[in-house]
Length: 296
Ligand SMILES: Nc1nc2c(ncn2[C@@H]2O[C@H](COP(=O)(O)OP(=O)(O)OP(=O)(O)O)[C@@H](O)[C@H]2O)c(=O)[nH]1
Ligand SMILES: [Mg+2]
Image (tube, helix red, strand yellow):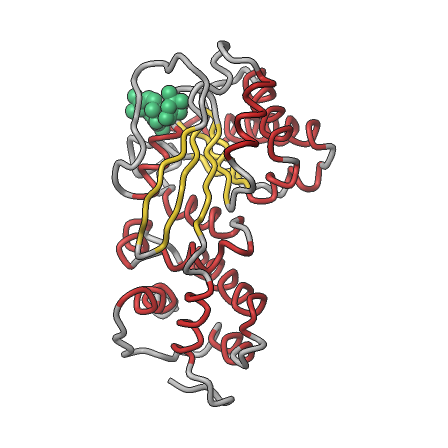
């Protein structure tokens, strides 16, 4: 397909992806030991990339593990031992900042059924000191173990816990507005649904795409294979949010300079490139893009 400026859309996408080829997406998963960090990463990826522990680790560490989806390289940094009472916070702050410069996405994991907030406050303090308050811009708050809460108490517990965590972040960073913009997603790694009967995976994917750093957006979208999109069972609203983020990223990453800005902006509404059967990474990105048409 060729747009009005004569530049082939697929070629332009290929160029953009080539620009992000050397990009390694950095995810940072934070939360107390046993609260479901590794399980959450595995739920997202759809297979076991991070080891799920039924025991408590003894030493504080920051562990990075690498994986690749659809040719896009990523590293997930996990924080076993954070706030398990054994570590020295100063040392942990140094350790985190020595291993991670700037994550593209941060998942802040806490249990929905855990009401004490001292551990959260401590974790929030450590992260903010190690990576700077800017890290909250890329954050998604994830409440695990949602099904440990009774359906009748779910909404109340969710809003209470949301308020407590956002307030703890606001107190730490001195920025209420930034804190209250962080999306909160309740999940349960043992089932597809939360106590309100809704599927959670699509919400989590969408929130991560919404919050990922500008530099990481195209790479993250290129990771969204048809498989993942199907598994997440994205609804129309979620797809619209992802499309919006994609268009913004194209416009910001030089799409305008390539002359495809206007064409891409037009794609938000125009049904095009149906029937394109390219392979590889661009093909998959297009597949992701096309998912808008089954929702309209
Ligand atoms: N019911 C329920 N169990 C969960 C959930 N998430 C994780 N688990 C279980 O909780 C235990 C700990 O999960 P992990 O994913 O290893 O937790 P972690 O935060 O990575 O723990 P560390 O690596 O030790 O810091 C495992 O037995 C998981 O199966 C959840 O959402 N609901
Ligand atoms: Mg773990």
